Length: 458
Image (cartoon, rainbow, N blue to C red; front, side, top):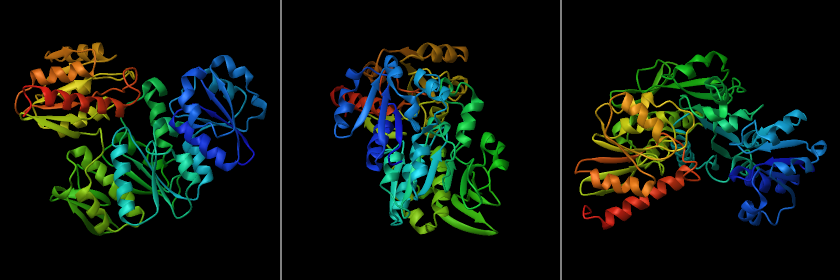
């Protein structure tokens, strides 16, 4: 990309990483962000040593000389309907995501993890296993410095363990990871993709360009995934938490086993795995498949699985006060993720839910309450929608609050010994918080505040 004119669209985390990377490569950098310049002061300060031409807001789109632009790299969350992207497409300028651009410039081995749920845990776990194996590696994508920047700072000996989203995959053309993981696919981000079919197509791009020398780690129990396996050319490693597989990774007699070419290999006893829940068992299986594809020994894999404590904001145990346990599952940004959280925690549960509306359906989410959820605390844009759905199924123990402080206070007032309080919003954080991490940390701070000061605290 040396001496090429590259337009970076969006001054988010990935956009800033791309700008830093392009500067290292010697590209001519142009940057557009829809926000006013005064709202980007901190970001511009971070980039002050880099020579670039900046444009802000829709009024400045006409100031860009599109005839000179060779390529546009789009930040993942920017929709294709916004004026800048529509203009680029109309002018036949190629618009790609950061992971597509990263793939084009690296010789590193890419392990690419996607799926509706489980991406972060699986990616982090694979990273820990690769680290234990003494291979050079970087955990990247939605985690860390951004895949484009990490690609520039890697060589062919590196393993790039990348969490990739449907937003990023939608902007790929030739992207071809050596190892691709699809944890599961359920409806999500309809506000971005508009149809479930478009969302599925984006996820499929994780494996679409692979060939016979590559590996695809796939969920045997996912009907959507199994619906397109005939299109996958890579070596397939299936995993299942429901049945014994002739070929693949499965559970038999409380043990994770791997069968291949008529041979069976013991990986680990499931009771030795630290992180709880069926969904985490499936995340572990994904990681096992990826690690085996990298040639990592079963002993190394087992050593990590015995000690891996999980990731922040995913069914994270926070505290216990007077026999009431508090769990932070702020990473539960869609109904299916929150269903898995409910399945992974013992009853009775006081559940905090609600947030940004991604045009999700909450029927299955409410059905999963069964007799496990005793109270529902609602906040955010989706509160009305979730409450209406809950009442339609006869669930009425519902309390409305304005913010996280009120939500946690309500939980302390209503909980009794033996209860489990779970923040698992089933919604994105936008509108109330910049991301799920800030939301989760706010929850934990409120829990510790009220736990430390409440008469209920030990």
